[in-house]
Image 1 (cartoon, rainbow, N blue to C red):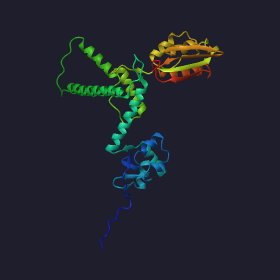
Image 2 (image 1 turned 45 degrees about the horizontal axis):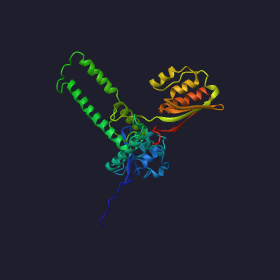
Image 3 (image 1 turned 135 degrees about the vertical axis):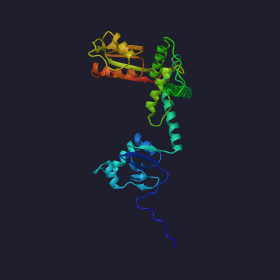
Length: 323
């Protein structure tokens, strides 16, 4: 009678898995998870670990079904560390291994999310209208192409300096300084090279907005928020007790021009005042400001009015009346 092949006791075969891999010490450890559940766990959407793990076990190699011996886990993670804590460390700090299809799907999802965020926060400076996602996508594609070209030129320049490329032509008097100044300007300007799956959509959207505003492939500016500030009327003429920290140079300059009263400081922080009025003992002003002004006003009102002032957002993007 034919004898069956015995599978080693420390081998477990799993299929249709997503791997999370962590190198600890000189060993590499893996855990087997259900597809798409790792990202949900890390984002906080999924809270049940049983829905994430295919099996509560640590492996040297999931594909080979080779589990990690207890002695190796103790050596790498510590003597008294429970298995659950080891799994959580791998799950939170490990590198997610995904297939080509999953990677492409995740990249497309991240790309769409970044474009949606950017399209909702940038407007045409003339019309004050938000751009379509298609226009934003084309503008970022232009920046990506420029970024790739600049990277190639930088590589050629390094090769030239090292003697492996074509010798550079000596610059004329004054040209060297101009070129150096131009290089400094291009280096300081934010660039965009495309979406990655290793960063959050919000952080990448912020990078994309900075690159679009700095390079202007299409005319853009941050969407102004329509805000309302309210505070007791009797504090308006009081002198500001302390200078505000934070904000950009333009905001600091506008605040420096203020005469020093609470009202003047609030008005200086708002870019365009739409209306202001006093009803009874309450003063109210409505206007437009950049998103960064919201935090500045919030901190200012908290310290100068002892929490009796308030700032709220009425609209996120400024559009023409009747749009």
